[in-house]
Image (tube, rainbow, N blue to C red):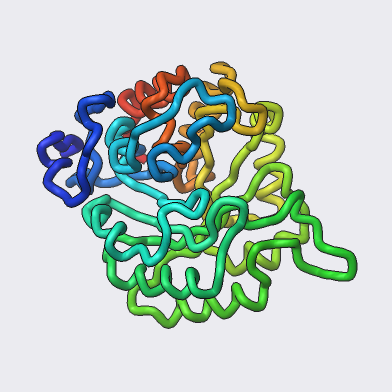
Length: 301
């Protein structure tokens, strides 16, 4: 079974307050009886509605919630990332609406690398309360080009190697052991990142600008040279946030086609489409992603 109804979607907690204003599909959002399909390997980057309003040259503002964005593309798995300090911790009450999402990851390092020991501890505890939370995520983790400061052997990052080892040890002691995931950009590929990556289970690899994306195979090969055999999710931007303009459609098609090939070959574990809060902006790349998922979602991996 590779299909769930919209009625099934609406059974879980969390208000769909703007449902009449958004497109939606009949694609599954939650766990199905299928084995391992392309759709099962898809994630969507979740931000609160309106997070990018009046930013990045986007064509309009958004009212779409993370759950609505996931439903609109037919993506079953969500990575919730704090943006501009929203949502604010504690997350328990807010997170309850995601309890029936197929798989969920939650950031304890938010945009611009913002984090605190209190938030790290809180999300560790939250992961034990939600059986579908499969990972903890670190956004914008490395600083700048991830160069090691003078006299240092580790890359500049939001969390030191020593602290990340402590978090790694805590994860290993938990009954429910979530993955530790991290964002890595194509412009941060230098050996200094190895010490942090060695402590992570999962890397999400991103090309910040269209120029970086055009060199995806070359940059990805360089990444594999630094972190061979690392479980990887390929980040799929649906807007050129680096330059603040639409993503060229030839590059959008290329990254989806390349990701599908790598997914079926086992080179990557999955794909992340970014982000929920641009899915109601009538962006061509978003519409392409919606059609691409409809076409390829049921294919087996």
